[in-house]
Length: 247
Image (cartoon, rainbow, N blue to C red; front, side, top):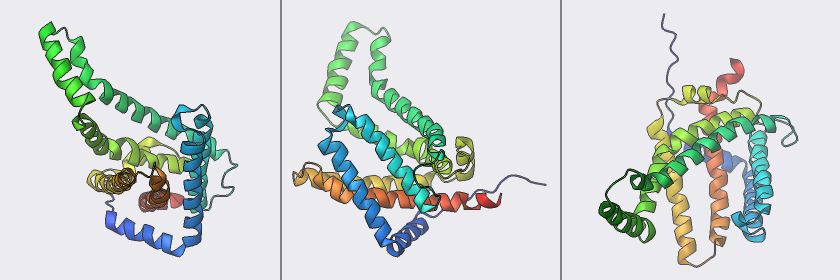
């Protein structure tokens, strides 16, 4: 008897309609979370000085609790904030953060590896001036290349592991292995979703720079996009994990 668990393939467009229906049926709730997200972004990046301020660490903790509250509210897990489950969610979130930072660091330092291979001095000089200086410092080709690589791996290091974090937030198992097992076979769909949301974010940021809005357009238009993105993730979670209560 074959006991292998069947692969569940989700439809990005179908989940999109489900997320849109939730927004339509819960406009007040979505509006409140969108406004709160916008105010928090303004607080962190305008009033607190952004990542250059020590207060930004406090802001990160508050922002983390905000999204914990969002998902606990979505799944009606009371209390929404003051619960030990928030601490349980730190385990998968720490793993996700470590994997993401490790990959980002590897990609950032990868072009410098040839400098340690003992190559001839003339080759190193040519490499330093021809690639590192011209393409990394003066052109955006390198930046675009890193962006493409990060987008390609996002479904693996962020999107799917994020389901484990949601599970921990709402009081279920935060196993990354379980999240990978249940979502296998959907890389292309996750990649499509990642690309779509990144394009939307890029267009908002491009318009902000074009209009010289100093990130205000990112706050105003980016906030509903981020909330909708998380609703989309919640609906994706429903598709893969909704039957866990019956297991």
